[in-house]
Length: 365
Image (cartoon, rainbow, N blue to C red; front, side, top):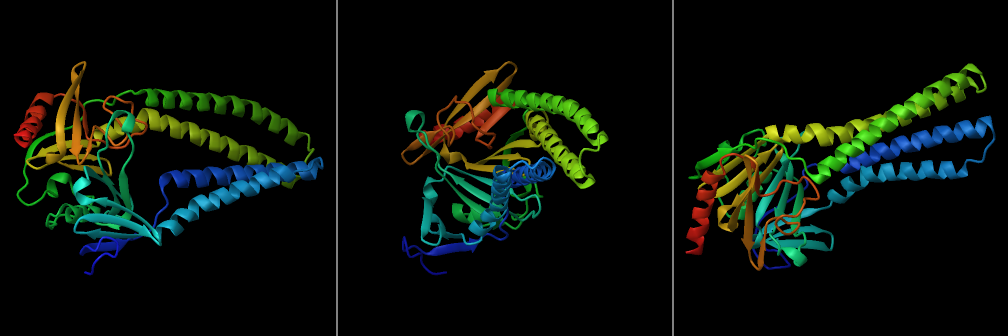
């Protein structure tokens, strides 16, 4: 390997996106925009042919939605296809053309691995640095998208010799420990918590469901009367029915998706979550996501009892930084459901607290 031109350090690894993929949010945006474009186009054709109404604005809206759908589907692939990743002795570098972002390896608080659902050996590696809490809160992270064997790459960044079992998200965390690493404690969350965000999402799903039922109840009789009058040509009647059906399908899908996100997904994630503390690291597995944290980064361990269960928060330490989470201070409501260094809704908080605090005291001594 050569040397990096920016820092002049020896390169220990370099690579690119193995297979550029479209993020889930962009896929949803592309699907919604496509349906809205198709529905608007069908309505425009029916109005123009049946009553001669000017539909220039509707055609423009349809074209605009189609452009958004195409951009949401293709732009991420084009953008990621030219990204390069470089790991040097002291830095991890993200670069695309003249654009560069970097993070020092000794400032990385923890890493997230998001395994691909299609390729078990591919995923995203997110490197997060702890940030000051309170008014100075901000997000400092670097994401390496679609890299091959992200857990092996994280070992290289940590300066640890990658083990043979690494490289597949289908293996459990216990099968992919470092050489000489042993499990001291393991547990799983006992319940899924209801947050303000989750309650608001459930309410939004209920509103969408009621809207779907009311819209369907009003549109079906109207369509039956209109088609029974034979006021439209057969082709126009088919377009009108198709537009209404697509609109109802979009509304139903949105109601089901929002309801699933609020009612089903949190419980499913709880069943798929496992907490592991070893003699060197803290590991959390939730579905296809993994969080790995060196225990030397833990500054404080905070036990927050909630009825019969406990939430154990890990306050992280780093160069000129100390924080509970990348988004800000301890105790704030999360803005998303990202995996964080927290043992949520566990029963045996005393044991894990003693194990982690012992390492913290050793570090302070």
